[in-house]
Image (cartoon, rainbow, N blue to C red; front, side, top):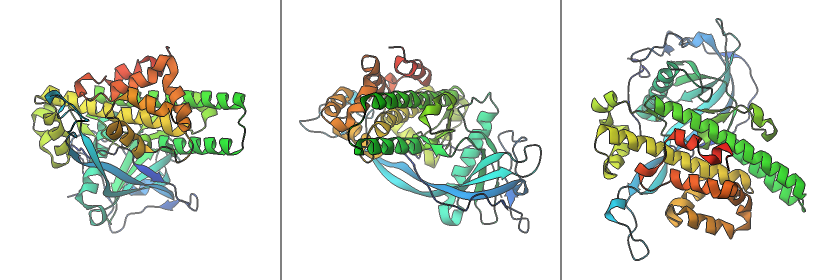
Length: 418
């Protein structure tokens, strides 16, 4: 049986901030993926309609290797610290947890490509390649199947511009799962943030920074980051409206059609990386799908937080995505506005969760004392500290008090209504 055949599964292997490593290549060389003794098997249809997906390897050509993924996932959760410095009521237990983060074993490669046959011939695509069971274990096959299932289901709805479009996929004789996506851009929000921080470093290294030029650059940067956040939240709102969790939301899971701040008017951020997406439809939860081994930690945390019924678990899952979106907001508020190396995803998360225990007012006071974080503070201070206000709401220790995606989108910080 084809191990990548679509089936309904749930995952809870959170990729807070997956890293992309750029690699050099020889450019597009048009190497055709051809069938070998009939072993290149097309992905089959079970639970979703896939008539429009291209499932023949002969219909694609592969270009250069453009990058690779290393997923960071939550491996365990430990309880709150106790002692004279920390006082919590019994209601806090289970709502706030300290996270132990480890790197997952599944390594994913990205290739340029194009469709070589049919009415969409010449369409540029990006291949996402999951290793076979020998290299990635059964988890890699399950991740590929889940990503295909999630995208196919969502594409049966009125897909917004802020979701990456899957066009097909197949399995090779080596057991690798190749998923083909419409090319929505080569750069992620993580790549943009790195580029922006490097620009800041170069500007400051040149000595005196013209105040006017600095303010104009920061104004463009604020606008660009806001547009990234708006696009990400529109995609997340669409997923939640259709009973799907993302569960892997981070700067590397948002692809940009341009990383140029001067081209913000053309920017379209798109959500990708749905390998850990979870079906939270009431029928799915009632059917016992929450008992899957890879979603076990998600639902265990839900139970620890007092979510016992189907609808409480659904609300917890949505709030968990919002928490990840809050960490994304923090990342985009700090990294692009600081010099290279000053802040990264893990240092931001530790600052918020471990050092200040999600006390955002205390985080702001700390940042005010560090001149390297000046522009990040100014950004979050817009609209009488509207950014800090939104960050506190999204990272609320009590999942019941976090806003839904639509409420985040309507917040004055993302709308410029100050």
